[in-house]
Length: 122
Length: 295
Image (tube, rainbow over all chains, first blue to last red; front, side):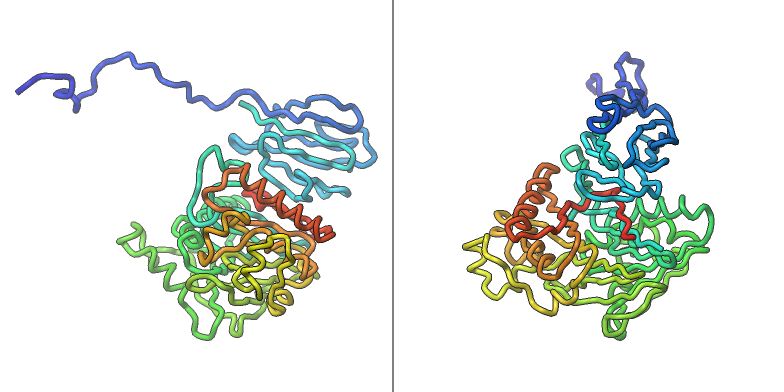
């Protein structure tokens, strides 16, 4: 029988193969505010849930077209989901009025006169 | 009092995972329609699996009652059913509808795809209560939702569904080759800008919908090579929606060869057609994970 590297294929051999880093992404997503009071500015979505509102929540924007508590963005695993909190003017995702949505890179979210661009984390 | 519509699978023919389709999604046909009293599920493509997970989360251990309406039994509309986890839990109840007297074909095919040749778990092992029911003459009431069904033009046949509840109307009409119904199809292919006239029965079925979820698999160019395959030009859906006074048109059943960019180009063409017709119709691409509230 010949001997070669495949003769030992059913045994685990010691080696030094570098493994890819498979940890979860750590850079949080960002809501880039491009219009409305305070724009331009970037809001880091660093928590599991972030609420956007006129007078309540984590991101407060003094716009009369925002409800007191307007939108929640929740992290679900690697994704971010926006949800309308029964606001008066609603949420428009890329121009379409929605109740909730899984967000994708570059999505435009319009809340009254406030516009955000969503940037996914990495 | 609200009516919710959520897209769980918007791809046609075959699942298309991968970065080129991540925006609009790669799961096949599945749409959830939810009212105060009823949970209706249109089609059980691969999107049904994730809907099942969310239903369990929402229920928090409480029993789930759902009503499943299948447009037809092609693979991309039934393939998710064996992976629908709520069907494996004894407290839950699901009703699967046929639309003619004695029609249990869908029920039988769903159980057939779980024979041991195809899948390791037999249909009889599903511990939820799963029953077949009929909406004779293609109409009936499911909880607080009035339901109508209309036969469509597709190889092997398919059904469109109209749902009305709380003064709102949603029509789900996938796998329907609208273009074969045009009185002068050849002329419409020669001059794609010419208006396309759909049959009165179909227009009346769709009439006044707050939302029409319609199969718009092909661009105008793609359709020339796919005539007779059972799917329309997306732009023909625009003409149907305008004729029927629809408020919003969600184009679904995206072709598996279409990337996210291709889907967006298809939607731009639909919007341009609506503008050409001086219509304020809202047209968008159905996208996995998006939920609308028709208040």
